[in-house]
Amino acid sequence: QVQLVESGGGLVQAGGSLRLSCAASGMFGRINNMTWYRQAPGKQRDLVATITRGGLTDYADSVKGRFTVSRDNGKNTVYLQMNSLKPEDTAVYYCSADVLTSLVSTRTYWGQGTQVTVSS
Image 1 (cartoon, rainbow, N blue to C red):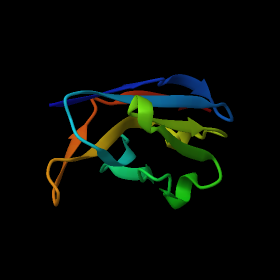
Image 2 (cartoon, one colour):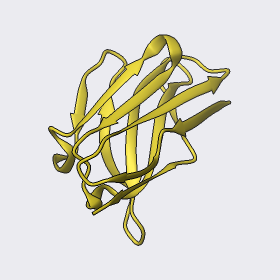
Image 3 (cartoon, rainbow, N blue to C red):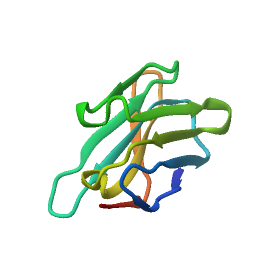
């Protein structure tokens, strides 16, 4: 079983910065992709940023140039550095981890989410 715990959310003024962390714990094999999603009230959950085990990254267009995803494989932790925050970045942010369960399959685990609120 894998537990993902996010931290670092909070209230910040527009233009400010926050750094989210998501740590995986429990008994598990190798973690492949780790991904950040967000969900605003009344909207669907959208991908924000993803990072492979080797460090390749991809971002939603709305956050390119402002957010940076990184990870520490030794600590089984993924980070999301968020700069130049805008009110439209307000959402609950979730992390997910794709954990290798066999040679050919993975299972996706989710964190409980952390609230990010950006005031104008």
